[in-house]
Every structure is written in C-alpha cells, then in structure tokens.
Amino acid sequence: LSARSSYEEVLARADYLRKRRWIDEQTVAVSMTVLILNSETNSPTLQSVKVNFIFSRGGGIFASIRMEVMFLASYSSVLSIFIDGLWMICLVAHTSNRIRKLFKAFRRKDVARHLMDIVVLLAWTNVVLSWLNVALFAFMSHLRSHVREQLEDLNKISDAAEYREAMWLLQDVADEVMLVT
Image 1 (cartoon, one colour):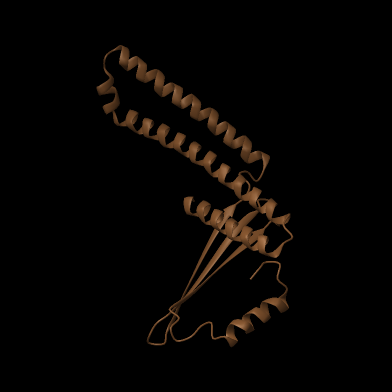
Image 2: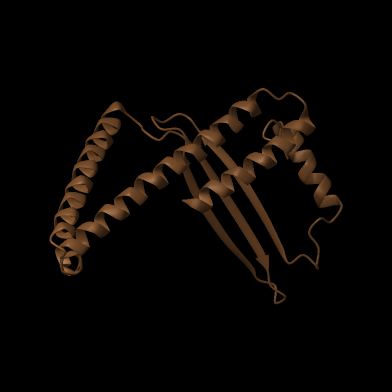
C-alpha cells in the first residue's frame, strides 16, 4: 500500500487480500510498519509505528506495538543553539584545564598518582564522555540530514513503482537511524 493511495484503493486492496485468504491457518505472524511525518510542531518528527500480530496454535492472538520517534531537526530554537554553544565553551575550558593539570603532573613526574585521584579520574571520565556525546550528536545530525534528503526526494517522485521503492529505502534509512538512537 502506498501513502498516496486513496481510501477506496486501500479498501479494494484489503478486500483483494481477504478474498484470496491472505491470512489462513498456516499464518504465524502479521507485521505492519507505518511511517508518519509530523511537521506541524516546532521540531518536525518522523514516527515509526510497528504493529506485530502473532498467532498461536491454541487460537490466541498476541499483539505488540513499538513506536519510535526521530526528530528531523537538531535544534528547535535559537535558544537551544545558544545553550549548546555555551556548553561547548565550558567543555573546551574544562578539557584544557584537565590537560594543563596533567602536563603539570607530567613535569613533576607524578602522573600515576595524579590519575589515581578519584576526583581527577571522574573529571577525565566526564571529559571523555562529554566529547563522545558531541561526536554522537554530530553523527545523528548527519543521519537526520540524510533522512530529510530522502523525504525531499520522495516529494519529487510521480511514478508509483518508483515511489514505492523510495518508500522502502526511506523505511530502511529510518530503521537504521532509530536503531542508533
């Protein structure tokens, strides 16, 4: 089914599948994934809803729903950019301070004792994890831009088969990004 299908086309397709006994006694599970683009908020989101129906041999039906949200914009306002900028300035200052103290300990030939101090160890852990956070944020921003490009390309497609193929590609990209998050 395509997102551009009319209500009548969706009903006709469901009727077609029902008449051909698409789900029969041998069916073990039915899975369905829906991508929802919500651009009505300050920060547009791509939401993935995955519904699984698992049929037991005893006649029961077990259902699970998994919803994931991916923000398509890294920042929702100028204020959040400003706050992140301040945080980066503090991180650079803290990192340079830690490096300066490490060089002082190196000059005193006291690096081992310096690094064994719990406060110093926690400070270095904070620095390393903070820079890892920055790197992951940059990586996620790159992935978001890739998804936005896919969405923009999707709007330019008029051929139904090409549109369907692009939707599968977008689903794969969105799954990859949501897996990372």
